Image (cartoon, rainbow, N blue to C red; front, side):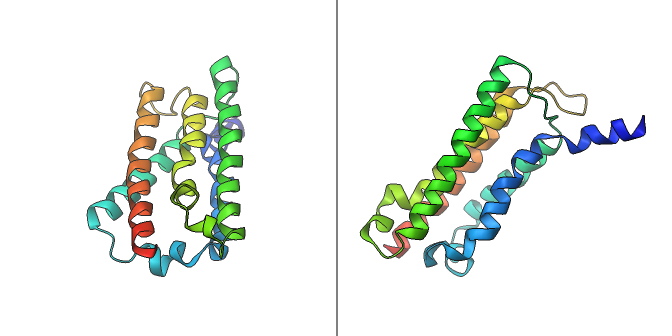
Length: 166
């Protein structure tokens, strides 16, 4: 019985974050110099740094407390949106990696794509969520609102880097 109780805590929505984290770790060093930590985090206003990191931590932590159980129509739509979103996100990185020395990589829309495409996979996770493990009512708008706050800071950060480097 205890194995079943513990198992439910390992089948949570954080599993959906793992492919993103793995991708970021594996390919980070291949991104253009503007995305490397020694450039990306230098001279960014503290309110942006702290807002981005706090909202990221809150968002990822919430996924740990959201059971992963896809059974409703909206959860299936959320899974489809999540899959579409991670494919788009991965493609945005590949554009930057392979168009590194071309004019296309200096295009604002392509440069910022890794910052704005997470709206799809994060919204997908928000739709997949149905409850928390603790006794607080789950509302999709709550998770998605935190995702939007994170993305506002993240996109502002990326835009500042774009302005500095182009």
